[in-house]
Image (cartoon, rainbow, N blue to C red; front, top):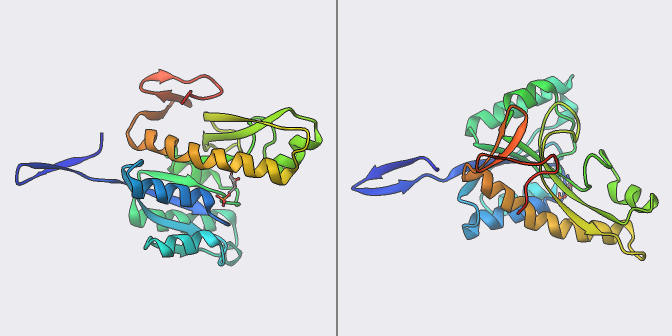
Amino acid sequence: MSTSFKFDSVIVYKRKKIAVLVSGNGSNLQSIIDACKSGQIFANISIVISNVKNAYGLDRAKKNNITSVFVDHTCYESREQFDQKILDKLRETNPDLVVLAGFMRILSPIFVKELKGKLINIHPSLLPKYKGLNTHERAINNGEEESGLTIHFVTEELDGGPIIYQKKVKIEKDDTSESLKDKVMAKEHQAYPQIINLFIKNRLKLINGQVYLDDKKASKFGIDL
Ligand code: GRF
């Protein structure tokens, strides 16, 4: 449940806070902004952070009056120092959930440990297949008949944290990496707000490295929507 307080005998529910980290276009960020606006997600985006100065995701934040911050990773001597700076920025708004939406930096253990259980990522493949980059191209070149997306809690292992949800997408004979990307992306924009909403409603949790929905253990491929 959301935190609440009484004001003149009216119960007021406080919206939770989400922080979003982006490095590029931010189309997933846009789907989250839209879901917060429409009420699909009962939360506000408190901050958008990017390591890329001209990331369009930062413009999307500005257009929606969301605090946007650029942190230049090239100005830091180590990954840990950069991550500390991001953590400092996050602490200023104290978000309930931190969402990686196309954030193209590997995060250090200090970062992941501090946010354990409230840090999630979306990846354009059916993990554990095709970790890393160029997922659509590799899936097509390997003659896969299906691909898709994975939403997972983030742990120290790159693209290896407990799976929250997967959605499959059929690969047709004439699909290119671009057409497959478009099909998977369309599903990402539906799935990410739905999963975020479950977390915000306290229905989705990470307990001892295991994903739970409504106190029911998820399978290793995640939950059903
Ligand atoms: C998405 O494909 C997401 O799965 C991956 O990075 C891409 C980000 O796209 N992690 P966008 O910036 O949200 O448009």
